Image (cartoon, rainbow, N blue to C red):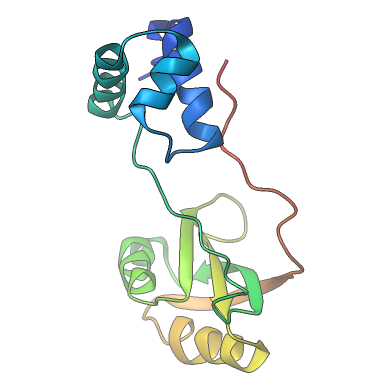
Length: 154
């Protein structure tokens, strides 16, 4: 379902402002857009109800929390029917922060944070490789995200 055709200028401006700082109050947004607080409440409620706005998240600095290693890991499955059970098992591993089904050589691609390379090895070999249905992995070490953003509002 595509909602972009249902968004007007005010909706798009609300989203732009929330993307820049999701902690802004509705009062601040209303002042910026020169509209009423109730209009902002109504529009945001409508966008939440439609599923366009999923949540407002808190972004943590992984390095300041002691996670000095990050990887992207492609997971090869023994057979395709293992996919959902593997994803459910991956969700139980706290160091796995993102999981996607993908096409190509891998069935699943995950983003993993660890304290250091030894911790990364433990996550990969003692947790991920032990999941029933996992045939193998290829791991790509990240040297740090250069940027991270949401899709543009068109």
